[in-house]
Image (cartoon, rainbow, N blue to C red; front, side, top):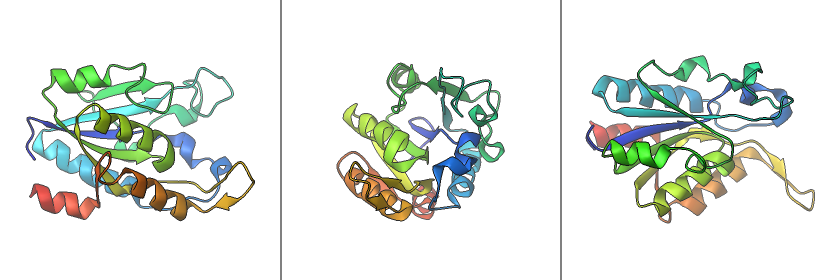
Length: 185
């Protein structure tokens, strides 16, 4: 990988996900791994893009007037880094993400963030479908447990693993932080 064509995309690493309402979460080290990649990207001078979920609902944790809208300190954007707000799961829908990638000559996208089965998965699928060489970093994302339509509960680790499995070799190459770092250096 080289700086001319690779972007690190950090999706929805916002304080809203610290709220207890989400329940059990896997991969508590996700933000630390994202920070490790962010530090490496910054050292190399490569393109970093932050995606931030914005809700129009004043009651939402993701509403701009609520503390949850803020990006977590561990991955806080630098002034020169791009921050794109989105209102749906995909970082590509209703935003200029595709245009930003194309205008910067980006052909490879490394995706991290929250949460695996939602915004991370949706953005990863679109990235692959749009023709970007897409990498999803398995330990730099996380999931929360949830119930299905039949009230069956699925724990966070199961949802995370299944989400990664549905993306690997179809929409993206799934790697760990360490695998990606080793590939770069």
